[in-house]
Image (cartoon, rainbow, N blue to C red; front, side):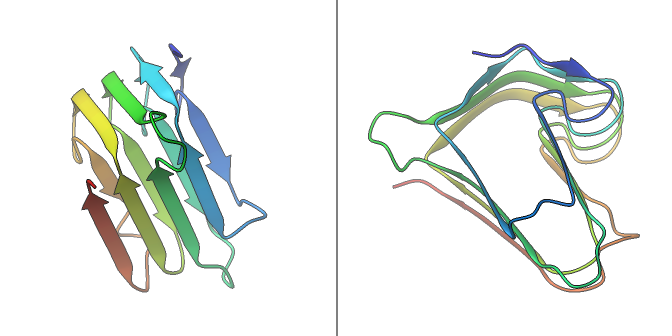
Length: 126
């Protein structure tokens, strides 16, 4: 279990990833605090030619991703996304408890000033 503290993205700060697909699978995060945006995850993709897909999943039986007591002191309690192109965010078989942001996006915040194309958000449990 991690206890992250950072200015942005207390557990993960992902900037201009080399892969268009980011998978967070079976991670346990507790008591993470971002002093600005993205209590647990901050994703920034500002290159014009990329689409980004982020997935929280459970590909290993019993290895659920878990997020608890996560806070951002600005936007995006769990996830903050700033991306120019299309964004696909998928959360499957994950548990989330006590997540907050002081301003907008208690769970997710997608920066409307940067996203110019489509946004697809999917939260499922099997």
